[in-house]
Length: 298
Image 1 (tube, one colour):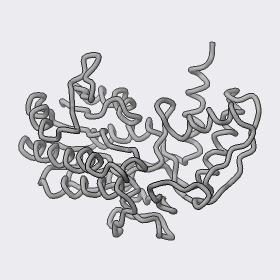
Image 2 (cartoon, rainbow, N blue to C red):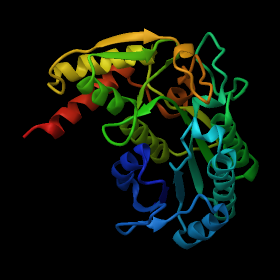
Image 3 (cartoon, rainbow, N blue to C red):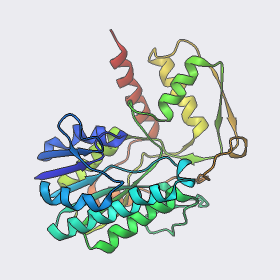
Image 4 (spheres, rainbow, N blue to C red):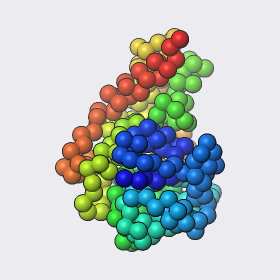
């Protein structure tokens, strides 16, 4: 099997570099094209089909995205170019050569008004430009006729990159008190598990195109996630003292983009179709913190 990984330098992309080689030959493409990577320019979607034709993959994994949720409100053209036009161009190229496209989407396609975990076929209603651009990408892929698997994930973090975990650890070192939003609910999901599950999906095969939710089990708030990060970091020796972690409301922390208040996604279909059981979010966090601690050891 030959695989083309797009977006190999992001949180999930870096983990896919580790998880995919067991499946076959992997060609990695990034914006810069450094260190032997191919170049993939998502700001020029029309250039991507030529890359796919040149590599001639059996599977394309698209981990590239415009993820600056707040900046997207003032840069809608850029968000839609990367998140909608580029996936559409990739999907059309995959359809031409009958390649499988595995593409990541987001909980932000929903408005967060649900009172139970969102299922794949629930009505979408994005609150902002980012969510709207990701939904448009999903729709472009479905309309292309490409054989595809759209994987919606949420609250992604990793031991590397810029994410909520690293922000909390940095602030915990610098401050005695952290104020974190407590009225947005979701499931923190490690990028490493997303990559491992993606590899399992590809290895299993995708008999029919569709959409699946790929998130950790359980739920918490950003405040609860922050408290868990502090607890785990203290236990692992990454922090010397415990700062106070106070809950605030979304209204106390205004942002340009509105966020879904409830981002929990139902993973029943993932388990039914691929036999993949989502780990509890707290177990995932424990493993990531343990990895960080091991990396810091002398």
